[in-house]
Image 1 (cartoon, rainbow, N blue to C red):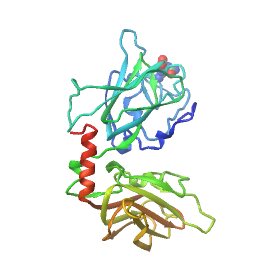
Image 2 (spheres, rainbow, N blue to C red; image 1 turned 135 degrees about the vertical axis):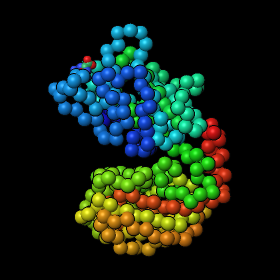
Image 3 (cartoon, rainbow, N blue to C red; image 1 turned 30 degrees about the vertical axis):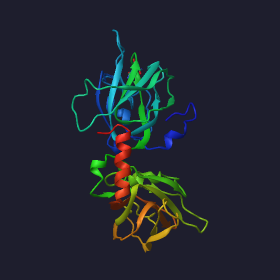
Image 4 (cartoon, protein in one colour; image 1 turned 90 degrees about the horizontal axis):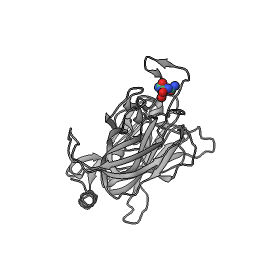
Length: 337
Ligand SMILES: NC(=O)NC(NC(N)=O)C(=O)[O-]
């Protein structure tokens, strides 16, 4: 992302739209020059000047034709993780002579898996605003409601490299209650709230769905030289008791931690850390699973010794009855269902 202005705090929240968390561009008015799917690519926009394909200069973004009639272009995104949108980044990186001069964003919430969104009520979350070329534009959003889809409008046409939709994940309680679920999954609403180091990659990566495809898709710290150890604190999707922990060092072959430990705290009670898994040896490039019996916790701390990387952390457990009620009430209050 090109940084023409400092991005506000909301950009540290998960990107509800990014492709690697299940986001999809389901329709666009036009994608003559460059395909709509690029909008949600997880990597920073790339550019190779004077690289021409059959349709012109190749862009890592969404680019429409020069519009010769009335109207404007738009792209429709289904969020991978429905939630409360706290801010949107519209990044025109590398679009210097062909960016749209204005853009707006709308959001809606629909239940289930509707194929047809016509007739849906859209709420404007970013008013029509001026854009610059080759710049990331951050727009805070104040809408205390659940969103499942967003629509990016560009006026009248042009290229946008990325659309990032940052926010708080609001899980659907129908897929969380009465089940054993991953309390550490981003898609269920968990997040890393503190960590010792995120030098090579973000610790939130450990909470992504599926298996990491390479070292970069996990969490990796710098080499630690001070005798200490690296750690990350995860705020669980909801308070619950953990029954199975999985610590995966896949693709960390020469930089896996030698050992790991888990501890937990219940922020609703005394907030004291209690051991859940004692310091245990880890292998490189291996999925380690541990059956646990724990009290209810709201936060889990993963300590790795001394440093290195973890590709995935799964904490399967059961929500407390109280947590089930709270999740359901929150989802309904935000307009779910
Ligand atoms: N040189 C360009 O980028 N031209 C145009 N776009 C592409 N992709 O070639 C255009 O007209 O917007």
